[in-house]
Image (tube, rainbow, N blue to C red; front, side, top):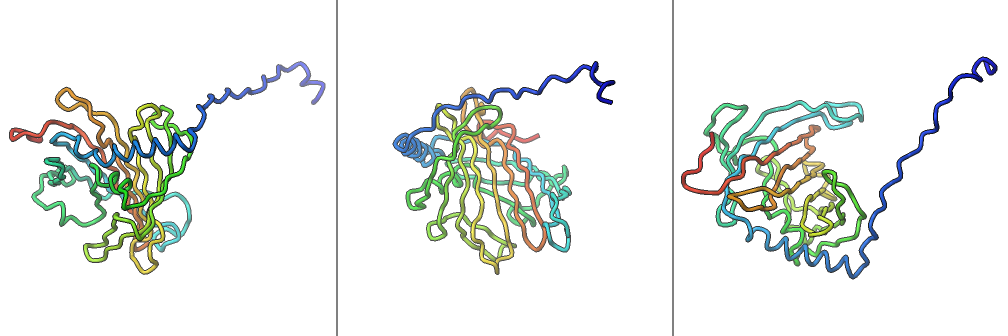
Length: 265
C-alpha cells in the first residue's frame, strides 16, 4: 500500500488565514471616559427621538424546557410557533403606546395588555436608561472586541445588584419581582453609540414561577422624514416557566413620522 501510494498527489497542508489584528484595548482612564459618554447618551436618548409610528411584528414560540416533563433531553429546544402579533407602536412625547392590529394576520380589537403569553416592553429607551441611571450603580468592565453585523465593536459587561434594580418580571399579571441582572453592551468603536444590549435575570428566587429571562436588543440607524435616528431594529426575549420555554422574536418595521393622518395598511 505504501509503494502503490507513493506516486499519488498529496494534498497541500491547510494554512489558516491570519487573524485580523485587533486595536489595543482602551486603558482604564479611556474606559471610564467611554462609559461616562455612553451614560450621558443613554440618559438623554429618549429626549432626542422624534414622535413616530412603527410596525412591531412579534413571532412567539414555545418549547419544552430541558429536563422538564415536556423535554426529557438536554438538547436544543424544538421551537414551535404559537402565534404572530402585528402591533402599531406610537411614540409620542417620550411615551410608548401599543395597539394590537392583527393576531395571526386577522384583524382584532383585543387589547394588547390583556393578551396572554409572554410580552415585553421598554425597547425605546427605558431598558437602556435603567442600566445607566446613577441610582442603579451598574458595574462595567471591558469585555474585549466583538463583531456585530460584520463590524468590529467594543464590548463591555455590566451587572446590577438586586437592591438597585429597576427592571421587573411579571407572571400572569399577579406575581412580580425585581431581580438582579447582568449582560453586555456593544458599542460602535468610533462613535460609542449603543448597537446591542443583552440582559439576563440573575438570582431569581426559587419560589418564583419564572426560572429564566433573557433579552437581546439590537439598534440600527433608520431614516424618518430624511433624518437618521438610532432606533430598535429587532429583539429576542426568552423566558422559562412551568417547564415551558417561551421565545419572542420581534422586528420593528416601517418607521414613519407621527401625524394625525398616519395609517397602517
